[in-house]
Amino acid sequence: MLNKKFIINILGLVLVFEALFMLICALVAFFYDEGDTMALTYSGLIALIIGGGAWMLTRKVPKDMIKREGFIVVTCVWIVIALFGSLPYILSGTVPRFSDAFFESISGFTTTGASVITDIESLPHGILLWRSVTHLLGGMGIVVLAVAILPYFGFGGMQLFNAEAGGVTNEQLHPRIAKTAKSLWGIYVSLIAIETVFLVFGGMPLFDALCHSFGTIASGGFSTKNDSLMGYSPYIQYVVIVFMFFAGTNFTLFYFLWKGKFKKVIENKELQLYALLVLFFALLIAGTLALYDHFPAEPSFRAALFQVVSIVTTTGFVSADYTAWHPYFTYAIFLLMFMGASAGSTSGGIKIMRHHILMKNTMLEFKRLIHPLAVFSLKIKGKSISNEVVYKVMAFVILYFFVFTIGSFTLTFLGMDMSSAMGAAATTMGGIGPGLGTVGPMNNFLLVPEGGKWVLSFLMLLGRLELFSVLILFSPHFWRNK
Image (tube, rainbow, N blue to C red; front, side, top):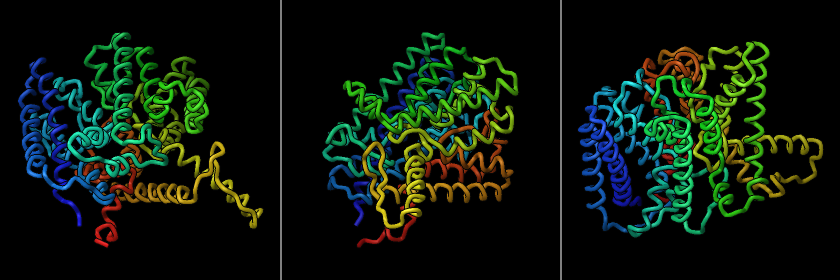
């Protein structure tokens, strides 16, 4: 039997966390005095009262959780925080329609960065900060934050962490899950602070620097400017490129770096592939821009590198309108939407390690055809990868493209043209932000049909929780008591 009261208890606690951040944004809004103070205050109080009440009423329930309840909690957490996260938009009148406000909210928490707001620069500072805070909380996962705190309330959270952070590999930094979560958050916050300093040094106002740092390290993409980072200096763009790349790196490598385990970092196969992939596509696109479009060498390299890193890491910031380049670039960008960066990072997408495992397994199949009696094992850096992992990777990739196909056709049925529908489905599943066609980098998602916004919201949730954590809830086997 499901421990329903315990599930409500955790949801209440997470809502309290969310409410506290809303109230912090309300203080910022009060400082700027732009009319959004009460909207954020009321939103925070509503979340605090409901969340605090739910937590208090169920605080004496048994503190145990099975794996099945972990999947339910994680999915419910993202839906609930997105629902309450839409309140500031609705109450402030910034995004008055519920479907649009929920879309904006879940886009922030899933670090997708897709938006329905046409004039971002007209938003008051409190709402701008709240948009970026949704990235802050969603980037490393509000569930991981809860896992770091839950032990102080008498219970652990291994099932929560596994359901939220389930990737190809899940290497812990410490034997205790709470210490792992706190270490990850320490790295996460440190990177945000360092980037903020570099951006301020480059002339970006502190408020904008903080918001962009939230969006960068969370691989989110919400900006405080209508044209994202197009209007900023080359220095600012290079800083963001570097930290986007960091955000797409497995966070455990930063821990090893801090501990002086440089060999573990340098020999990491996924990091090597990640860097080579970014460099290859950046040079390819930059060379083509310089050769055929006659772009100067440095601007073409910077524009290509920025967009490649932004798409691969699923951050979604833009420094140029890549859809205005040669159609070849649009195709290349579309392919990169399915790449993703490293497992254990804040990026979305399929992830490089999954692609690597698939490619290695494909090469092994050729060997097996030639030598049917031989026994081959898939190895990465000398370590054998079990068949179970290979099967899970294959199942994930097949399911990913199946959901993408169904999503694209559904959006087309709802009125979007095929190019825009495919771009929208790919970018929301991958947590990227800008897509193609009518949802490209110079447009937004406001004109997407209302039904389409709900479809895309669901795709964002699926992509953020890596498909299985959500889709397993639709399996009849999941709900059987045996």
